[in-house]
Length: 317
Image (cartoon, rainbow, N blue to C red):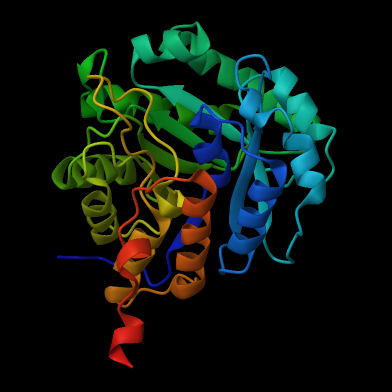
């Protein structure tokens, strides 16, 4: 039996997720146009860029300037990603940044070592330090993510019990540090999830923390993205991270067969919600316009479906 939410929130990651992974460095003006277009769709959170090493990620070297030049719309949060304290301090120096502090956990040791040069257990303890650093700046974590929650290309399938170790740690950390329980994000970082495994893991997290808000960070690497969104909606999940036009790609897809899909496509998931009668606060036609703008900027066909076919509402009129 489905337990659909009445309202579904989408947090847009395309302007960061998409442009960060591209080999080409796209003009600041083009990225500003896309962000301003997304601001008119009804989205309430847009991840604009990341404060990371310009040596390793030159695509994001101008993130501070980008924040200063976008046209901020009232009621919309413009957020950023950082991975270490240096990046966080850079973000603090840009007054235009809207902060949604995150805690990051790995269900895969190999992935943790690859991304952060530490084990998954060491990464847990680093998050304790992050909570205290956020407190120093009068912030509390908005969200906590367990990445590679369904599987890892380097380690294989991840068990529910292994993932729940991290979510139990998050629960206990919230008590120890006397902070509200953050949004609990289940992240299918490498596209291993399927609808039934999504339902099982959501059920386990809900049993652990009945009052927590559960979010999904879904990758469409193997074409399961929208199906997994549907499964999560059936379990009552009302919070998703997604990427306009399917911008981005999965650097962990492997097999050397070209450009794999990244985050689930925002407008495709929004169409699903609207077809199910679920409110999102998003104007799908304006979102489609933004997705087509993204495709024009990138200069190749992107992964989204609705952007190419159009929505159904104009055909019903």
